[in-house]
Length: 261
Image (cartoon, rainbow, N blue to C red; front, side, top):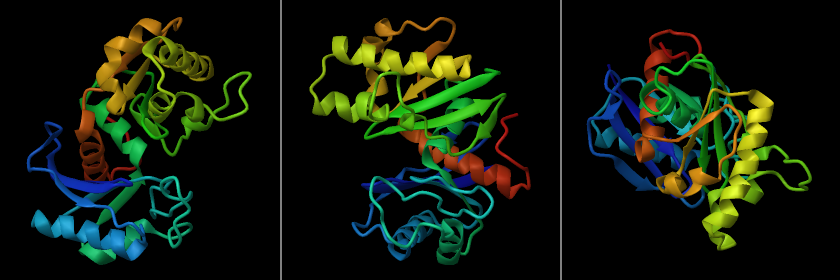
């Protein structure tokens, strides 16, 4: 099946058609700058522009930087790091469907990126509990059990023992850059966080994504977990688009939840 996946980010909105048998984009990625206002009408217009550029009519999946209800696409938390007006409590799904004329499913962006890793990437065929995290401006997270998504987790917002601020303000990728931390300083911070996740969830696998994951070889030597494997994400920049398309295809087919066969 072919579906359109769209990844709404703070600086750019990207989309491509995806072959969901292979988990691969089959068109070049279309990218349009995110409107500075991040208003619902302007973001919806960009989603339509991407759909039109790809000459597409069919189910669309959208990864959105907010907690989202999977049924109606209601925005539960302010999108991105700012409290942009017009979204909270309203349906992103309805707005995008009105703009494109297509059936749309909207889900949290970290959830859909994790879904791509579980279905096609580093978590493929792994059973039990998997946590996919993205290290960037903050920390995104996707939590899965036997391929079933627990939506809208915010595992970057947990508190580590002895800390007064949430974890992502201590070990997100942005923090490494801003504080100019060397790997010998940043690696133990990340390990402290991963040990906390292991203690909370006892996962079989933790997948680390985000741009910083390209340096996985430099960080993995600092990990000291008791039983959990930690690996680098495989889908890289395609994860958000591929995962969003997978969400669209499954829910458009009438399948409940986000389970991975």
